[in-house]
Amino acid sequence: MEKNEPPRTKPIAPKTLHSLITSCKTSGHRFRPGRQEDAHELLVHLLDAMHEGELFAAGINPHASGWRDRLPIPRLDETTFVHRIFGGYFRSQLLCNKCGYKSNTYDPFLDLALEVSKK
Figure 1 (cartoon, rainbow, N blue to C red):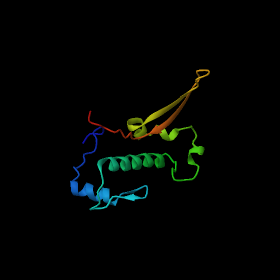
Figure 2: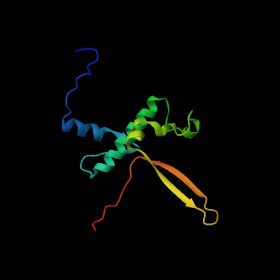
Figure 3: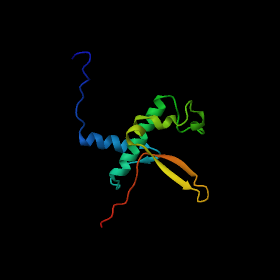
Figure 4: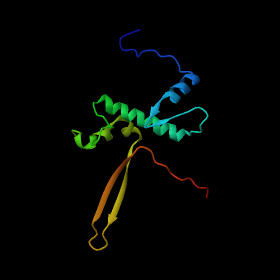
């Protein structure tokens, strides 16, 4: 193997993946055999775990009280690769009918639930 060549990995068997998921505990939730879970719930927990892992690797403890107030750069936690790939912002806008002033508020999100209807 050459220096610049990525390390070779073996494929993961579904049984191994299942045991990894059921043994993983994220945000007080544990996936258990026999309990109905959906793909969206799994995705949310995986994204949260990856996001928290990146914050911990950067020396930020997202479980500590007031941790956002101690960030060296405001909203630094919204710059992880998980937020850059899957994240976005909701914009709420209030419009003053008298003066026409627009007030915008932006709230971050990682997943967006949309209702799909048949028309």
